[in-house]
Length: 158
Image 1 (cartoon, rainbow, N blue to C red):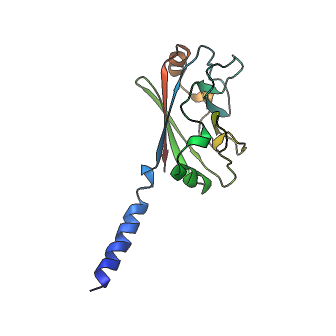
Image 2: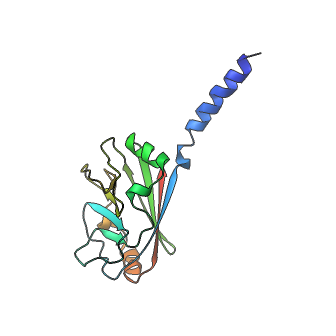
């Protein structure tokens, strides 16, 4: 009689483990006239309202979150070295890439979120070994961002 509930519980746990993809985070930001999207190793969004033309990694300003504000579930996934898919949307255009977390992540910045192709980590880094950088974002999307269009970033645990 007790065997059935235990089997059922084991099945539930296994099925539940397959739903890691339900961990997701949405970040909203805006474009800015100084966005160039030319950086070769990083993609960044900032909560600051202004950027200089030298900020070639920044693709969004006035973000509603920084790395410090992401959910505890996503932080746990990233600190365990988990992989993520990042989807960047501007109007009907979507660009996606993958990256991974690391136990070395600090996740402390209350101003920025940075995705890095390298393994370098600082307080702004959300993920490393990204498969894309700002220079890889399609130019039509960068042009829309230069016009101040809204930016949506969806991060999903893999």
